[in-house]
Image (cartoon, rainbow, N blue to C red):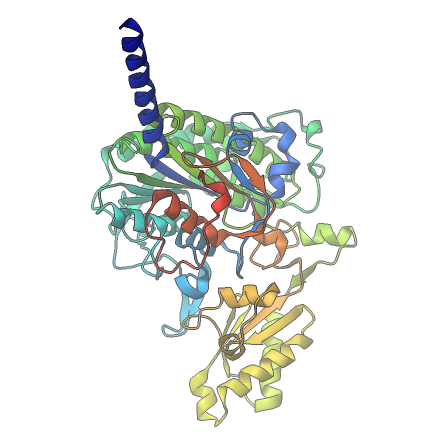
Length: 546
């Protein structure tokens, strides 16, 4: 009898444990999408020996890392990358074709999330007049809201407005971004709400940014140990205003006045720390991961991009920024364990684009690299239209390596727009920095299945893009010979980290080539919901627990 009771109790305990395990392994209480602005894949490997066990190494060892993940389109810019990650499709479908682009109807340049129909919530300024209205498809966060009958919460956070607004889509409870300058406030738009929640007001009143800016930015370790970077004092980096040379230490308290006061925090590692601070406050303030429904939080780290642009890929500042970001991530992951609970959340970490080595630095190593003079390009194109069509006003706009034709003028002169476009596409190859070109007509009628032309086609939107699209040589930038940028379809811009971690995720790595647009359908499958309505990516089966 005693044995029978023992076996019965044992069975009950085992059944209870199984049910407990089953409940943890079903759906996560919180999904976190982390995007690191301008992070190259090789930052994971170059600085690996200096990362802590609780930061990048934690999710690499216990999650699933896709080592050959790429963007499949041009251009690789912040807005486009964020939109594509969370919609599971390319600009050809979702409509965000750049950060800024020429509007063929309005006849002017527009910004991706500007929307004068809404007002700033948090202060009397105009930087909160934003919405996702130019994003024409749903995001995975939208689909989660629809699947749960609008019962969960979705929130986007980033210093940059576009990096907060676009990921969470159209149904979000909130998107918050940082109004710097002399404002020093996290704000939002009336698209989401009419007043800031109490927890946001309290966070703003704590004035943590001021504490970060009254310090000196010194390297975490002895600067002599930063052997993965160029010498601190070199000619390939831009200065902060007020600094004679771009070197350490950087007296932030002294420099902030000449660098936009609180805007300085964007361009230092503390901007990432400040973002984590706000993300933690959001999780607590909104009780994310505490209800019977799944919540969705997107966190984009913008300061890595500002640092990268200013100093370049191989700068001590960039290396130190990633070492500090690793610590920030460690604190964030430990916070999630405590606040949400181990096994109750799933996250993925990726980047919105990568970046090229400073071209002038590459030139010094005899590696082909170039600088584009856009005014010379415009002059060249004008000479082409003068030579072949006896007119210099057939081009309406040249931007983002696209030519927009003045169709009314072309028709008035009796020319065919396709003839003009093809002539420009043919002739612009004689401009010394342009490597390839194609007309919109060709992109509409030809299917490019691989290579740079395929990437161009994936980034081409027949409603919004130009009439001629151009591709410069690899390692070509506009403007200054100091610092770096991005935007191309070459691997230095497309190859980014992609790591899944947490509830429902296998442990492992893969060298198979995947597209960034595969993230959204994969997360959708994990959550057992419909994928975003424009999805063209595929489910990455090997990252999901069977």
